Length: 271
Ligand code: KIV
Ligand code: NA
Image (cartoon, rainbow, N blue to C red; front, side, top):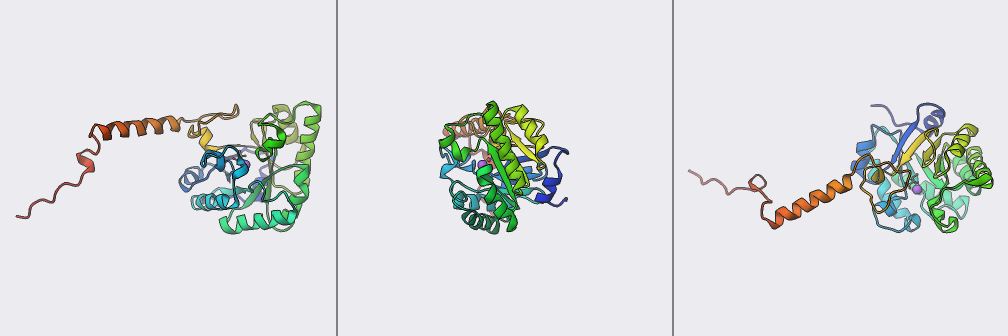
């Protein structure tokens, strides 16, 4: 079996075969994608996808660690990246280091991801200089939903584009080994991909990015509270699950489940 890529391998994939990644939050899902993904992200989307939170702002270090440990148990050949949750890194480079080190120590993730461009460049450089590989995340950064004013496409207009290019350049210069571009216009995503020398990982960006990522529950149709335009549903497992649950409920009420094959017969009398 191939060894899991390291952040340097991800960096070296710039401009090559597109990098494949998905989020995961549990061991079985991690096992299913291990042979198919270059890296797996333990995203703070876990708060919305599995815990019913209204945004990612309520996600804690403890939640990330618990899901990170579960995902790590399911991975052998994909690298694991773990999100730093809201409030765990923005205050100072020192705070970021303390929490990033804890995430890596307790989950054995190969890298952390944090949201922010120019504003987080100093923190990214601080972490990288101290042994923590960092993936950046710019464009639509869901932890900033309250200042962005919603989950809108980012980098629109000349000013928006200039600011986003500056963010991308800043995180690349700071030593990030990759950058997620979320919900940005295609041409801008392509321009950024050509301009910076680290891989761009698109989500709602462009097929021209150096890689793609999706939330696994979105692409499997397991999370159905809403669907972003950039989500392609490759399956409809949520519908299938509900049908299965409805069939079970009907059979229990009709006493057709359990059937003989699910039942332990009386012991045969001894002769
Ligand atoms: O938390 C998450 O799932 C993410 C990806 C969508 C990039 O940050
Ligand atoms: Na995230």
